[in-house]
Amino acid sequence: MLAKVLPVILLFFIPPFLGNYVLFLSLIAINLGILTLSWQLMEKDSGWISFGQSIPFGISAYILAINPYLTFLAPVNFLIFLFLSVFGKSLFPFATFITSIATWQASNYLTINGKGGEEGFSVALQLPSEKIYLASATIFIVFLILLEVLSKSKIGLKIKAVRDNEIAAKSIGLDPIKYRMFAFFISSVIASISGILHAITFSHVSPSVFSPFYALFPFVASTISYGKYYTCIFGSFLVVFLTHALTAIFPEAHYILYSVVLMFFAVMKYAKDS
Amino acid sequence: MISEFLAASFFSVFAISVLLCYRAGKILNLSLSSISTLGAYLHFNPFLATLLGIFAGFLLHESTKKLEIARATIFSLGLAIAIEEILRIIFKKEYIITHVQILELFGENVIWNHFIAGIISISFLFLFFSFLFSKKSKTLKIVEEDYELAEIYGIKTERARKIILSFTGGLIALISSFYNQGIIYPTIGWQNLIFATVIATVANVFKEKSYLFAIIFAVVIICLQKFFL
Image (tube, rainbow over all chains, first blue to last red; front, side, top):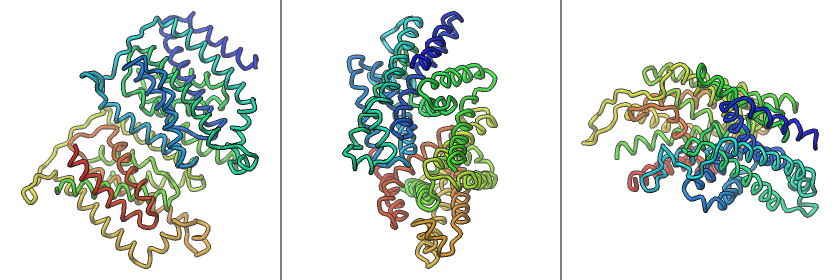
């Protein structure tokens, strides 16, 4: 466990020495790293490939901006995933992605007292970047340890058993819906916290939090970092730094990277299996 | 009501294309969104848009013919993003304003391009349902049912899939090159796909009659939109 967590902790010590810009980008990478952790719980342990992690991420950010006292309600949006899971595992990526795009479009029309719409909302809670960085890094490490422990715990093994074969799991008395709900709930809690940290980082929330960039980010970051809990942060750093480094000369770079990863993931997985 | 009728025919064709790709092509074709965007951006040359739509469909088939549905869907999403970004790189600007010509039809003002898109859509619907009610439609029904069973009956499923994906790609690009409101933007295709997917999802419940119900739902939704918005 220490061997897995230590490189991550060491990585978090570097950015504060490299100036405000690097610190800010690292903060974005850590927040999105937390989102990637939430996605990995859905995909790696539960076997549900979600292209809609931007939904709990964005909704929690919006709730924080509109009414911070209601933020505790944010994880309830795991019910969206639960509802979409009725389509089955093979249609789940499609259903979640279409829902996230629909949410993105709908959020453009959300206005309260003349505020909102395409411009979005301001977040009242404002903190210095250093403090948010410390909070985000700590939260990431806590979630990383928790998910590693959960993955090897009895309940984690039961979630994996349901993932591998629902019928066999039922035959030994496991309720698939119960374990699916548990995994979706924990995943939504983590994604919601990531959304809240993201909103505090920018002090602003706009419909872009539901955009395909955030919906697909965890998939891409996880795929290029070999799909492990403790490596996803490196994928997250790579995508965020690459995106911002190339923005001036090649603004579409991140989406090109996304499309390449998506297409290669599908083909390579097939090649690996066969 | 003519505009609504034309819109309903456009979305019926879009929804039927989604259904065809899913039921017979065994893929949830997310790239139809970008093919629609491609058609819209190439509004000045519908022929080129159609050719590129066919090519995109063919490329999708060749890349996903051995993949199961979830992975094929992921690939189609990758292709969708790739097409969109290529368009962004080529056209450089996100919003394009097009010239809109108004046509007066039975006392109602109709956009000329919508009229053309409507004519193409209705022609397709007529031909498609003529095929569906003919004896040849059995081939499609068997392919929809089971690929292995279809192979036993001597149907070349790979060829059928290739035709379906290429044809729907070309058709969506063609009608999308006409169907716009005078402003073209990058997410135009996603809006069309979401609308068509909602119609296709509900229609798919009706199994063999899903294509017919896709038209009915498209008409109902467009009418509801007219009354409530």
